[in-house]
Amino acid sequence: MDTKIKNKVPICYQDATTLAKMIRNKEVSPVEVVQAHLYRIEKYDSSLNAIVTIADTAMKAAKAAETAVMRGEKLGLLHGVPFTVKDSIDTANLVTQRGSPIFRGRVPDVDATSVARLKSAGGILLAKTNLPEFSYWIESDNLLSGRSNNPWDLTKTPGGSSGGEAAAIAAGMSPLGLGTDLAISVRGPAAQTGIVSLKATHGSIPMTGIWPRVPRRFWHVGPMARSIRDLSLAYSILSGPDGHDAFSTSTVQFDAGLGNAPIRPLRIGWMVGPGFGPVDPEVTSVVESAAYALKNLGHRVEAVQIPALEKDFALDVFNRLHVMEMKKAFLEATAGQNDNEIYKMAKTMLSLPDTSMNDFIDAEQAAERIRDGFAEYFNKYDLLITHVLPIPAHRHGVEEFVINKQKVDATYLQGATVPLNVTGLPGISMRFGTSKEGLPINVQLVGSWQAESTILYAASLLESVSSVSNLHPHI
Image (cartoon, rainbow, N blue to C red; front, side, top):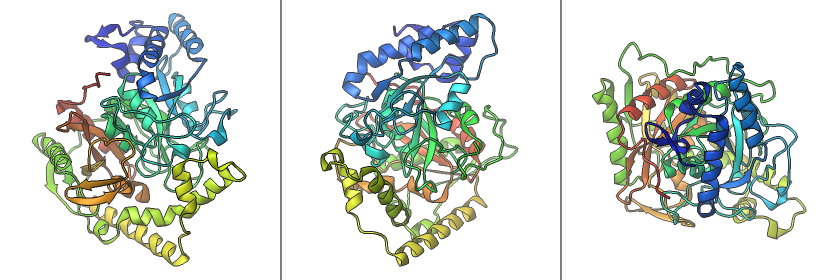
């Protein structure tokens, strides 16, 4: 079932763009593609625990897609291509259980907007993927479906909250998926498993049909894949208002192509701090290498600092702004439930003291200062390159780390990602290095608001010179 069909690459490791083209050209059938991915799930998911539910309609949809090809019907951009979805995102007539026994057996009537758009483009829903309870932690573990493992090293985490999705894509169980991101959750798991992901400008992709609804000022849904062109293709399908999510009001048009080269060299800054917390030197080296790879391609590159991030630590600002809203959502979900049905992170959140009004107002003002600081930065530069995580994938259950001789708790792993949630800026996570243990190291490409085309273009350049972008785990 892992038949090599093009460039000696198995079906399960072809990207979504290639699969869609091969299906249109009748080089491979949607049935073969879906079967190949189901085989991968059957063979490997017992060790990864990335998949929580298989869509029982997948094969029926694949046969219908094959018939449409043979009849010469008009085909969508993803016609016949399977995709997977994090289990906090509603899927019509397929359980969406949010990583919690409280929602065991819950079956939505309607697809989330993001799911509906991938289906409308011809995509075939293959499966739902694992997550932490309520999508709230940097490890994908819960009382309902258990813990997901990293395909590069089963003793390590694939991250959270979209960890099951990242593990599935990295392991060839899916070419394309949907995750959500409150502070790190599509970019961090991508970094820990060596795939790519996009957290677009806040509001670009509607959050309709995704729980929890609050605090929507920070929540994002975004594509995860194995190639930059797949992110670009998915973003062209997913973006735009849906008339239900009031934050989704963007009218910026985006072409699925990666676009032409800019009329001048890009102005690029790179940094790993201060303002993000400590970073392992091995990760710093990869960030610098990515920056200077772009310099070698003719772009202007220099080390930078953003003073606003030094004045106001974004992780602290984020925590003070979102705690009460998340607590309210968790309280509503867990009201009247047996304590044995609630996992540790929800219990931790519910035990935290409320943010005082003074602290909340101070945090609001700090968030404005951080946004202004990025606006000033992007008045001078087109792109910022940072790390995604300060360390490669770590072992399960670690709560404290020593990073570059500094002891920090696990929340500090979000130090470089959460500023983009506080500000709504777009960011791409993509692999550009390998740790001494053989684990992926990703970099984060950050653009100004609505500048997805810029970061996708720069990411495609890095991908073209990368020696690690096509590596896959040997599970």
